[in-house]
Length: 546
Image 1: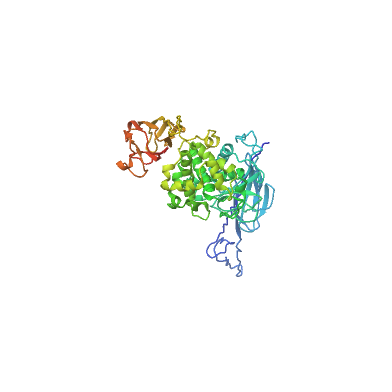
Image 2 (image 1 turned 90 degrees about the vertical axis):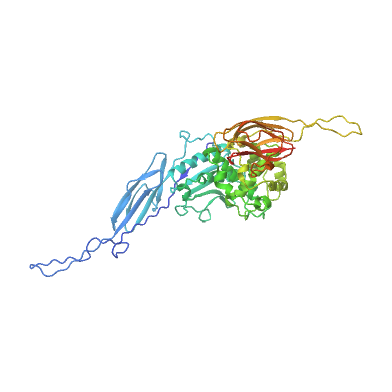
């Protein structure tokens, strides 16, 4: 069954124009001299006549997106009548008037006060013959109705439709029992007062997925300065809130109302997992589709020291977390920890974005579900954060990662248990093992001063893209074939420790070359880094396991 989008453009433009001058009131205009005309003639006696001022009022007529009006108004004498006709554009239909209860597209109004009126239009339901990609819409997907206010720029409305089409085709939010099959989306610029109210009559504000236990709706109040400054957030917020719809579609517990403080055991309130996932998703979406590092632009600056020492505090919505920076940091660190135990990067993100929510975690069992999905327990993960720094750039994901590859990844989780070969022993001999080691070859180039580009393999498979993470185990050999003039390639221990001898791991040959082969057989497990001597943004993680 085909489902469609409907778009309603609503405006609340109210323009009051009054003419006043030299002491006249708002409804009067000085039409001439204040002195009355007294003709004097020998043929007539003295007479006196006074010209009575005529009240005039302004009429402002406008058209919402999708049509035109026959007049834009003007200034009229009190009692004048004006006929106005609204004409829809192709693909739209007349919907009514803001300022009149008439349902006719042609109205006649009598002017007796300053008046503002606007013609409203609806977009005609999309059909298969239009350019909209309808192939992704089917009876299984949640239906969205768009209410996009005329205060929004046309380019934003166009991009909104593009983003929603792409999101619905890449991470489809499917209908499920207990969650409404239809969701309204209300969007406007805060350059005007909020034009929408929720079913309870409360004014809509901010950006959220809101609900009353029966219905849910998406709110997108876009700050006007985001248009002025071309902020990426005006688009990323669409992806962020849609991701919450996706979470709702996977997890019934996610849709149960709660106070964010674990008061309902059947709800789900873990902030860093809820908001960290959504904010990380929006950053990956912006990076993939606009080439902008939104981790850097919108989040990295907000990471606090206590995310390393007291990460459990970020389970609560009452904990301050600017732009969810600390929650994002925890999600990216979790990806690194999952890579350490055999997840590919895509599989790690897929487990966080999708698989975990499919298990329907609740306040009462979210830690158990965490360990089932991620193979590590929450406390161990929290303890591992003490080994990180608050420099989020160290754990940025590769710019080559895509949402589609994440959601569609079907690789298995590698087993990192050391491969061993047992030898026969007598009762008096101890059992011995023989460890199998591997050599991995990786080509390193640099097209600019922002990233190294790597191509090769590691213990998890292929390595490619800008500053990707690398995994190997103790005893493996990493061979970096470097060809990056002007970008000396170093392997270091601490990301902010510089290039002094104590920060260089032992056993690295040709460390610091820009044109040659850097070879390293690590002897100790841990997290290391490759980095450019002159450009600290050119950095990637090397994880060595036992």
